[in-house]
Length: 375
Image 1 (cartoon, rainbow, N blue to C red):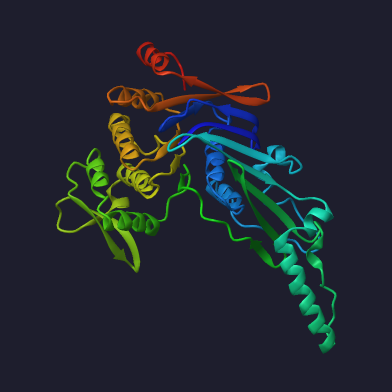
Image 2 (cartoon, rainbow, N blue to C red):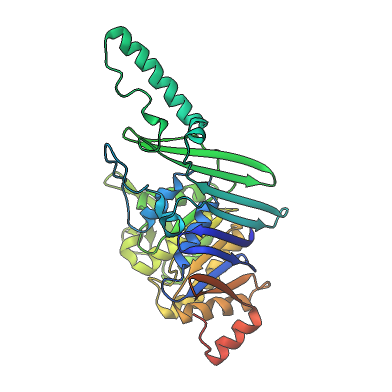
């Protein structure tokens, strides 16, 4: 579980240090201070593949990579670099605790000189393939005009991802050219990290798969109980195939089961969140604009079940919000628990960068009682 994060040259952050992280972390702040970008940095940090950079843009509704023959437009991953400047690497460093304190560092960079490109293993494989094809072409009288195409930055884009933990370094490469994407096979991530964007609906089949896996090992019970906060009549959940696609359904005592999305936005949103927590056991769940879809009257109960689920499945949660009710409800939910394992951080814009301000339990409590603005 992370206790601190340091981010350099990622999205809008030239440098951001955030400390005092707990099991559940709520991030506030005005628009355009980097709340979503902070979640994206945590998502990238938890993975081992440079392809995750494409997922970040997809979460914001930007999908697809256009390749233009003869010349390169801006690199498709340029947006994750500060000011789109790929000459400065992205560095994200974390300090974790339990079972032992460890430092993890993720570094994204773009190789730029010929010598560095020539040393990349995935390019060496392609060069060998091209060389073999060229030899075959010569014997058959075929032109060699395309031989060696991947040796320059004009004909290919390369992204390098280095992950290090306590001295052990793993390097991965992603190559993009007119033939598509090639990526070195990444090792499995150290833990599961799941992102729930504010403008992206998790596919229903994916949610059904998550529920099915939890049900298989008997870990679905807490999710059914938690959903009763919004729908007290809910008796059970079940996966039913509709048109060949599995969808989670709810039993509320009617003559037939009802697909969760048809039971209302609130219960569908809470189910998606809780299923993500269950699927990310011993990992991290990231939720952008967590209050969306919930009526203010149930926010307190929502935080209570999130706290219970995060503890039950041993998951660390990072969420963003614009809602004062959401901040107060989270604080009060944790004051009633055995341990105040909650941290509220507000991002503030200072000159050309953002800073994280931590509100300890006592300060946040005073703000909640007096109505001091902390969003």
